[in-house]
Length: 266
Length: 125
Ligand SMILES: Nc1ncnc2c1ncn2[C@@H]1O[C@H](COP(=O)(O)OP(=O)(O)OP(=O)(O)O)[C@@H](O)[C@H]1O
Ligand SMILES: [Mg+2]
Image 1 (cartoon, each protein chain N blue to C red):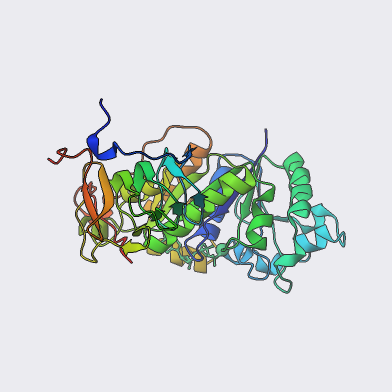
Image 2 (image 1 turned 90 degrees about the vertical axis):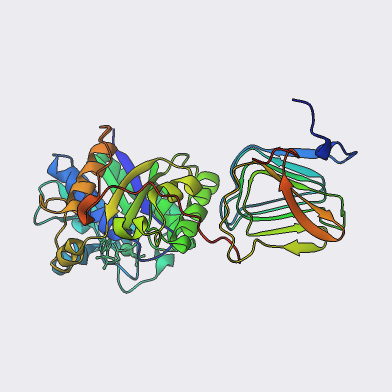
């Protein structure tokens, strides 16, 4: 049974595109047929992160406007067998894609792939509404910052009430264990306390992500990176394996259980 | 458990039950009392002309006695609001407030100021 999963966050720049690329690559590494759909029309960058920019001829707006066939717009990844990208347009805006056109598109993609993973734009407006419209599941990405968690909460509320996605899963990205331990960063417990949804995984802050992204590569296939291992575990959990959380103690010491009061005063 | 004295007040208003957590951007507004079986997260808001009772963590903005009822109260399992209003009194936790009350609390107007006390009374540890 194919699944359509949207990766969303509310706040921009928290790691949706990075997450989409790595989960997609991870699923493909395990033999699944995957297509990543870039729903961030106008600011596309999933193609750049995968190093596929120079192969784009048609994009999803061309498919929606029936200017090409779906198969013509889908690009095969150069590194992972089974991984595919449906890019979007750089030169159009979010009004080029409606929730209805996204639903129609995903119905077709489900016939062709095991996993359809949608990279959602930041915000909660039209682009968000179109990106989530066809999804049966959602992954909400946040960073350990008050504003990002607030936006994640807003998005979870919208997914539950407006979209009908009942149990979105949480990824906490860019965690710095050392800062959590010194009381200068929200802990995963603090975040889960507020958002009250299942934790799918925690990705540490890792410069290997920046390096690989700039090379148009993923980290999930890098055995020597902690973030890569964290993404691999997330992939296993998506497949239903109960993998325990990684101990992100690369910075030495134990994983902090310290609870911190986050400033709620105005 | 007997109804604590603190809540032994006549209040003929209607009451609604909200059986979910209010997330950022969501709000409930009701002419009467509101009981929430869940949390009220930062960025969410509850407004009632009567009392507000939160069977979870109150982290958002709460306004009880909206319309001018000074005798309205706010009770929460954990009371950590962004801002708390009763009738036309407005209060917020102090900026250096980092106490984490490990008990239910009640907010009400006494002598013209909003006060926070343990609930039920005498439940302090
Ligand atoms: N765990 C991490 N450690 C270090 N850098 C990271 C990590 N996750 C993401 N980044 C970096 O943060 C930046 C933003 O990530 P990304 O583009 O995935 O975010 P996004 O949510 O898709 O942003 P947008 O809302 O603009 O689409 C990128 O430069 C990426 O390399
Ligand atoms: Mg992005």
